[in-house]
Amino acid sequence: MNAAQYNTIVSLLKKRLHEPLNAEETVLLEQWLAESGENREMVQRLDDPAVIARELAVIAGAGESIYAKIQDQIPELAAPLPVSAPPQIPFLRRGFIRYAAAAVVLLGIGTYVWLGRHQEPATRQVVSSMKDTLIVPGKSGAILTLADGSQIVLDSIGNGRLTEQNGSEVTMQNGRLTYDPVTESKAATAYNTMTTPRGRQFEITLPDGTRVWLNAASSIRYPTVFNGKHRKVELDGEAYFEVKQNAKQPFIVNARNKAAIEVLGTDFNISAYDNDKSLNTTLINGSVKVNGVVIKPGQQAQVTDMVRVISNADIPKVMAWQRGLFKFEGTPLEEVMKQLERWYDIEVVYENERPALRFGGELSRSMSLKGVLNVLEQSGIRYRLEGRKLIVLPK
Picture 1 (cartoon, helix red, strand yellow):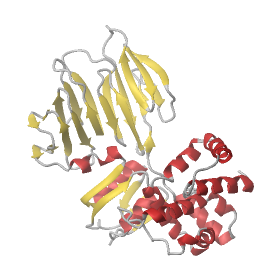
Picture 2 (cartoon, rainbow, N blue to C red; picture 1 turned 60 degrees about the horizontal axis):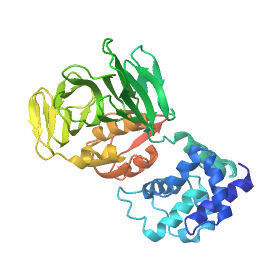
Picture 3 (cartoon, rainbow, N blue to C red; picture 1 turned 180 degrees about the vertical axis):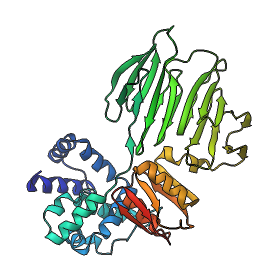
Picture 4 (tube, rainbow, N blue to C red; picture 1 turned 120 degrees about the vertical axis):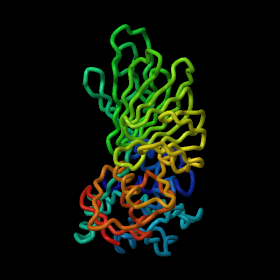
């Protein structure tokens, strides 16, 4: 993109925040949007106050020279930018959002590419450093391992048929993998495995119509067709299930060979990460048995060497990841760091002792790692970021 094209697009994005574009301007912007998915994502994120807050926090720490150039073009930003964005982002008043978003536009949603090319060497060095340390949030993606051991990376697969697996047609539709039984298979039961690496999550519809949302750093193993008396799957990590009701064929989740969750038709969340203290099953609707213990909607079964039932589970906190949020309620630092490791694909290490900190509030999972850390820093965390290694310092 040359200087003239850049200036045109920035002007259109700024104008769009204040008033409708005319027909000619709309065509120009649509052409630019069609050039790449990144362009489309940029515009979508301009409408998200959480994203704007995060980018403003980064801009505020980028140095006065960059902010001064923005301020020259947007006088309404005369007041100092907030240093960081608190969880509820109270400073983004309705009248301020337009100007805040315009500031973000000028920096290309945190990429700093254009300003980085046209600043003096010292400023360019700051901009380059910020680009290098920007760790973006996770996204939709997974690895599908077929019965023969071959693998398909699902991150950028378009809609359509992928393969047939022992009686089921496997298709991709709008970012969801679906198994549709097409023939009665007399062959031995075949299994597929879906794995979400760190920084990925994915949705799958199993052969019986059960829908599963797989969180980051998780895997689910399942038959390509459900035959026999039970529908059995194996889970490692975290997933939310909407089980298709079938009283004649109960649905059973074997979670890390540590818990058996049996259901008929219900909605529930299982968190079964191997580095967590307990394996938790939280029931939203219906009824389930966890290692033989029945729980009701709103309850959570925590499995260690026994089953402990929590009567009033924090459902919004449990389901926050499904809504694109981190939700903390007096959450210990170590648990917060585990979530960041999984979602941002980073390694967290502690320099000396682990600070006894707890956190509360909600944050968007669409924020960059730096944006999240800016917020957590206000609660006392001290850290150093070296590439993808987050070093937590003593308090």
